[in-house]
Image 1 (tube, rainbow, N blue to C red):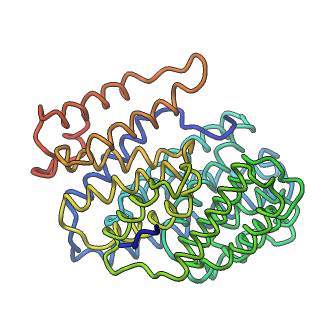
Image 2 (cartoon, rainbow, N blue to C red; image 1 turned 30 degrees about the horizontal axis):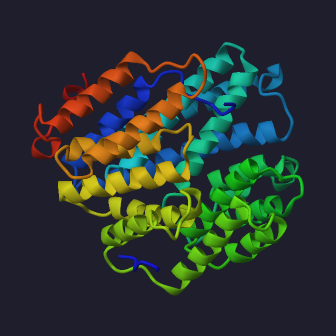
Length: 411
């Protein structure tokens, strides 16, 4: 019965920089829950900073998409200038942006880290790592730009990269850049092309493409209808009775259900009910509840950028969002799920969801570090897990009851 809604991928060289991003995110949540007189000025400065970042990335990606060598001596002066500007502005963004948004704070800190690695790799003459970090930065932009609704494409997106150069890129890379630059309509068309392509036959690649397609439609566009013909086409091409055919059928039913049943006014309660329902017998696997997790994450992302003051509600929202993000992206190299789960524990280690959050956090960290032979967990990560476990066990007071600066909390 339906509930009622209330690798080859780039990995960071060190997780300590991500910990710094978490420190800033926690500081913002614990100490900046109400608007300050300088909010407007900060947001204006953030917009200006992001515009410069946009222009630097635009130059680098346009050059790369055109087939030119970034390390060509004829381009080196301009490329170095763009990389240094990107590095400077990313540091500024990480220091003053997204005050009401823990996810934005975190992603800005990752962007800063990648801009450093990108500049360093270019200066050291490492073209493969330059490509890795340049397109890793587009992944960060994708993660940031697909969290919240955006009914219209960016007015400057069309000039980000020449359309002719963009059209020559492989479809998956093209879609990645289109989402990263808020060309959502173009991205959806490219993703639909991929979904219909006989070249995308393996389930892993198709699932990845469909996940991005559903996220853009549900979280960005708020459109439950557009994906239906695409999923029907996938269902027709899949073997009847297979797990893949079954899961796609559940996604179709979920899209139709949500399209006919508006969310209620309380996003936290609604998201909680959606996630509770995703564990029912109606969903035979975690993958079959994909639409539910994306819908819940959409509500939670919007909820967490509103003006919040209750630490328990904020903690629960982060727990639910961490769970949803983990179910959507089990092996995502960007540790967003870890961020949200850790914030949930730090804010309310005595809450009923603290132990489930900790168990999920451990599971995700193990997948990150220990899934391949010879993998090991860094000592600082092991120690942080012990700190969180001690907090839950009651050996330290709840972080919801006092405020610390980032340096005090994580030194």
